[in-house]
Length: 281
Image (cartoon, rainbow, N blue to C red):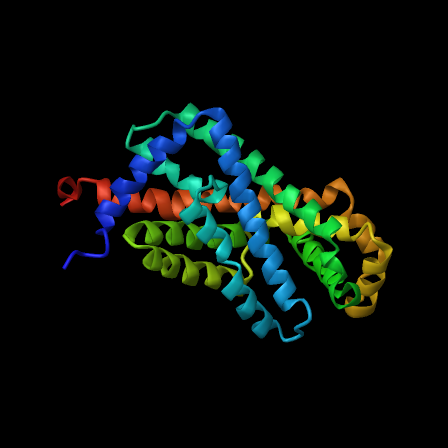
């Protein structure tokens, strides 16, 4: 019977080879794949918001959201997409001298911007679809609440939460690449991503959906009124959400995601499987 899993060292080698391909993608293809990944993650966030927006029990709501949100990364891995947080693992190919620093940085910058645009497209489509009207505008109010909570996180908490998030995301990607069949990849993705959602960790690409979605919802007076009635959110808080200052959290969450993916996963796993440990004995 054929082994259904790659060994950890094979997983690392396979990922490095895939990262070389990522680094050498034509610009147009890289942008399109980045747009898809941003849209896929946004769809996962949108679906989880709909499912939990009227649930008051925090633990139950997060568990349900955690069961739904992983569809975004499943789409990225199985259909194809370039996701900034997962591409932090390209550090392994850089360490292995398979890609240059400039091609690594080029990929991260282009994919980050493309992810943002892809997520924004879904934000706009959802807003004009009327979806935020669910539960008499309750979904719009909940969208505002989520955006405010993410936009007002402290820098230290954003970095720490971002680190924890991308540890789990990158581990999910490595686990998925260990499986040789679709079912194995789905299971490998599901549980780490479910864990990060339940814990409430911060993911910069997911926030590209959540915060702009809340900003759009805050332009609708009925959603703002519902946010006040349901969550005690003031009109001033909604106005602050619409300011440029509300986006400063992206920098700190992104920094945390970079540290989590590159240092805590990429660098450590490269050291484990690629370092010649005999010379240290």
